[in-house]
Amino acid sequence: MVDFLEQEIAQRRRKRVFPPNEQLGLSPGTIKRVVEQLQDWYLFGIDEDLNGRMFEAFLAATMRGQDLGQYFTPRSIVKLITRLANLEASRDRIERVLDACCGTGGFLIEALTDMRRQIYDNTSLTKSERKKLLDEVANQAIFGIDAGRDLPIARIARINMYLHGDGGSRVYMTDGLRPTPEPSGADSLEVRQEVGELRTLLQDGTRFNAVLTNPPFSMDYSANVPEEKEVLVKYDLASYGGKRRSALRSLGGHGPGEMADVVI
Image (cartoon, rainbow, N blue to C red; front, side, top):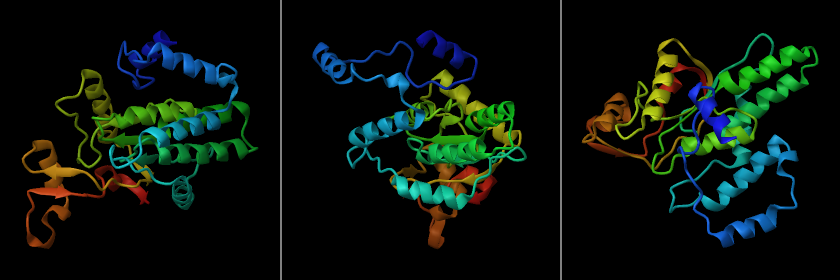
């Protein structure tokens, strides 16, 4: 399985989740306890939705809270916003969706679920048409961006998407507030290539029909950092009230939203 995933990554069909050759640092006692709890369950036999819900329960127990700076949008709000967007997935039109501050992928997964439901419920589609549309929704219509690096949130979103039946191939690790996606100087070659892929897509005319997002309100931008200064000078909030600020906290909005029909 590991070799297969590496081949998919090399062929640009998937994005990386775990660093190469990463190993779990678990003690024998912990492994024994996990096996005891899970050995009677056939996890490969459960459906994608239940897989995803289990993962989200794990996230809720391990990632949320002030210490990690992660406060995720409640599921009920995500569902409401997605319904308001009135996304379309049909033989005639597959809309593109973006969350430029995607976190662990809540909005992306709900959009994916909503659009797939439309395809499954469309009785006029042939089996081959349905398969083609489902693949297009999963791999070409759902885009996510997240800037988190100390905790690589984009990779966690990819896991979440994989468990919900999507390849996670359109989730990128970069700052969605920058007018043009650029990698960080600390990024690996692989991440730089991924960000370059996103930049090329946008430069080639990729646009979005809807942006579903809950922007973060705990990020700091300083004019002393070149890539952060680029964000500050782009948006009016940095000079609100006629005073140019050298630093700013809680900057909302995002650049790619300018290329969407609907922003919610």
